[in-house]
Length: 257
Image (cartoon, rainbow, N blue to C red; front, side, top):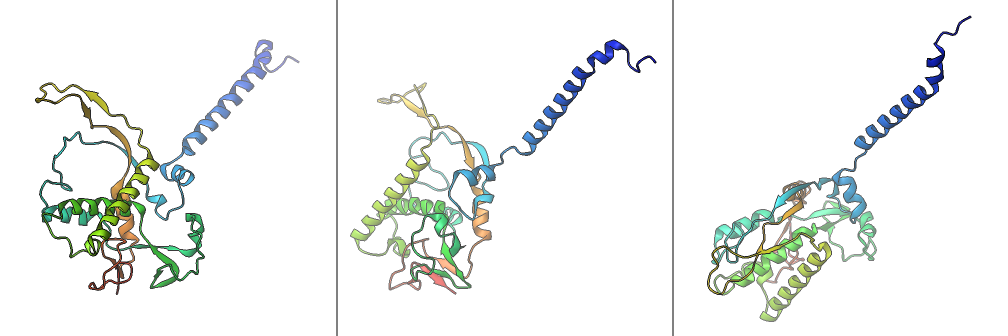
């Protein structure tokens, strides 16, 4: 009996089968590659220390403003105004967050979770109060900004500006050191390009184009997360600054309801 397939076709069946199998495997690999493509949160969890806000991190491309020195913005100006204070008040959290004591080791903390120095969440004895570090860095920047305005505006109604001149100087140095650590930790490798201005002013030479392109974390998402997870029955007075004897918030600058 004659074969079902022509001899020439039968001789190509192994090659056809192998090609089809290769195509199917390639398609499967492609589907898996697309479905398993790393997302921001997955990459962040593998690249950074633990934080309760890791899943809130998303990224977006952003071009920094190419501003000249002494250019005013909603957050800075040559003269202190209430509008600037309100702008900073809008980005600094007013309440702390809390984290489980079981996560202290993941944060590199050597103190025992039962140590009495930890400030407990009043409604959860197994959690301690904390703030996201971005808030401390912004708080430092805000303190230095206010300190630079001190000849023009009295900020002694804030806990961070209470104390002797020596204490205030130590706080400025603490903030400068904290910001230095943050800058050197992130070590931004964006590129600033020098250029000659078209119509230079007398004595003006090379300038930097500050309009650099960056892959930034979505600050609004992180800020929203901080507000959503705020311990609202604890109010902070200037973030982490300790309260003064003349204030109502004497325990680490915290007011407990």
